[in-house]
Image (cartoon, rainbow, N blue to C red; front, side, top):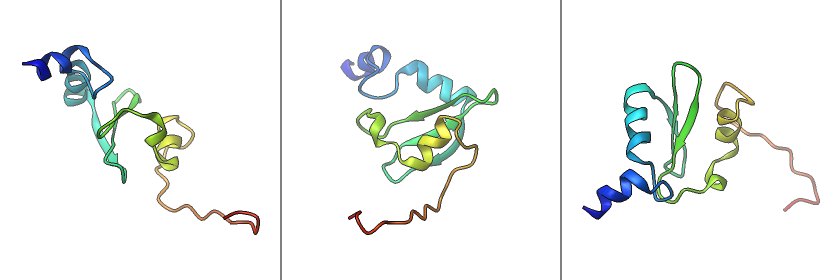
Length: 88
């Protein structure tokens, strides 16, 4: 019973019941990252993430961060960053 009440009112544990219902009815699954976070998009263009365990915005990888902030409309799978000799 306590977990059901936490699902309704407490947003910092995971998604609330409202977010879950909105995701079921309006969300289209776009993908999943290596941390287990799931990414959704609505028909109107709204984008959101359902975190796997702890809600922490720093757990979003770079390719999904750019997608969720509309920097790029495609999800980057390949990152070829040139490393300089002063980088580890």
